[in-house]
Amino acid sequence: MAKLGIVAVHGIGKQREGFYSDLRSKLNKYLKQHGITEYDFRGFLYAPIIQINQEALWDRIAKNTISLDVLRKFLLFYFGDAGAYGYKPGTNNSVYKAIHEKLEGVLKKVLAKLSDDGTLVILAQSFGCHVVSNLLWDLEKRQNDQLLVSIRKKLKLMITTDCNIPLFVCGLEKVQTFEKPNKDFRWYN
Image 1 (spheres, rainbow, N blue to C red):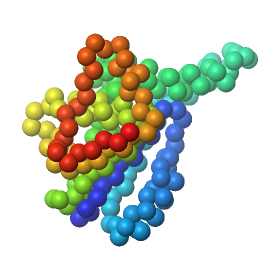
Image 2: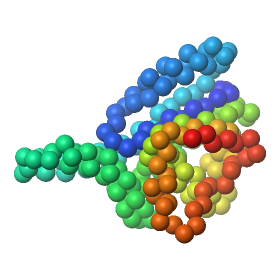
Image 3: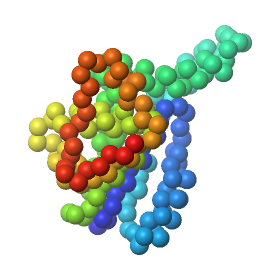
Image 4: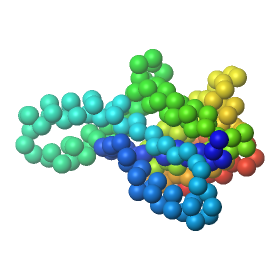
């Protein structure tokens, strides 16, 4: 059983499998230098859930337009992620739920490989920060959820970069986040 489990979550935009390869390589070198050789690392790729529809829309748009294509593509593939994710999150077939279900599966696999005293680390970039934060918030609302129990015990570190959560909560009167899972948990942005 591993003592360390790491999940990397990408940000918005066009992403492909292996988006984490440079991070994994550098992290492997760093951990090896510190005597850590046994750990479970997984990248969480949610982009295909959204990108398939973005690609289809782009193909339709591209057939009928000749100007401003770069701007249109940027808006579609970057802001489109947030729009698709936030559209009707409570409905059964929402992109929101599909992404969360897939992330839950990745977390369950990593947690299953951790020893009883193992540590879960989440690394999230840009929009991935928002996705992870929302999932942790949603898990708190589920009573006696085994995934939440495991996360509360083992999630000790979350590192986020280019966190854009303020963009999604700036209109709220009261901004709240998920509860600190345990006394050892640290969130570095």
